[in-house]
Length: 271
Ligand code: AP5
View (cartoon, rainbow, N blue to C red):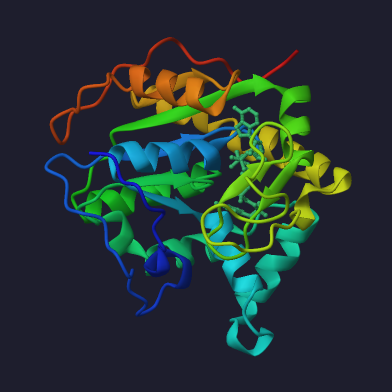
């Protein structure tokens, strides 16, 4: 099934009692995937494309923080306000805060439409907590798509990125430009450049990735869930590669794809 519209994902973005205006249709064998890779490798772009193909929701922890940023300061919890400061500097938000936000949104992980987790988990502690949460709710992870690209290409993707504050759609000024410059194709929102895409924040984010997130490739390889995918080429090429790596045909619930090849120690490919 191909979905044509972008979902609002209100239950994920707002948490609490928020409900999605158009919940995903229940799938007979919903896809439940984690997208792993360095900042800017294209996880969000792939999550959007995979979501249209697989009918599963794109759940990004970064989007939760960016939605909170648009709220009045008095509407945010002190932990969320502190989280935005970490994010602005390019540092990881403490595990405790991230895990509390994800636990509040556990019904999105149990959704019968499936999920595409982007930016979570990001540390081994988060991966262990996710594993426990999914086990408690009797939900299986199908695979972890691990996107790899040389560092110089990643930096160029980040510096040209433009994001929609309304529907969170992501564009690139050269590789994926909007139809009208500065305007979101989906909802007409005014596109902006993320604060953490400044050079000094990018450096901090890459260091945090190498230190805390790269070891997750080994964590998931040991569980036979890791599926490495080259993130070189156009978003559509990468989508096709991702679907092929996932085996194209849908797996019965509870089965796991075999990794396409053995993972490298770091998922940032060096030029
Ligand atoms: P988050 O929002 O998760 O950001 P990130 O992981 O740094 O990833 P990005 O969103 O920057 O990149 P992406 O891989 O999704 O690439 P995209 O598709 O946009 O996190 C932000 C911050 O929040 C963190 O730094 C941290 O502070 C905090 N945080 C979030 N989750 C956390 C957690 N679990 N624990 C602790 N802290 C957490 O693509 C990038 C650009 O490239 C776009 O312009 C796109 O159009 C373009 N592009 C994509 N694909 C291609 C292609 N194939 N060819 C050319 N251009 C392309």
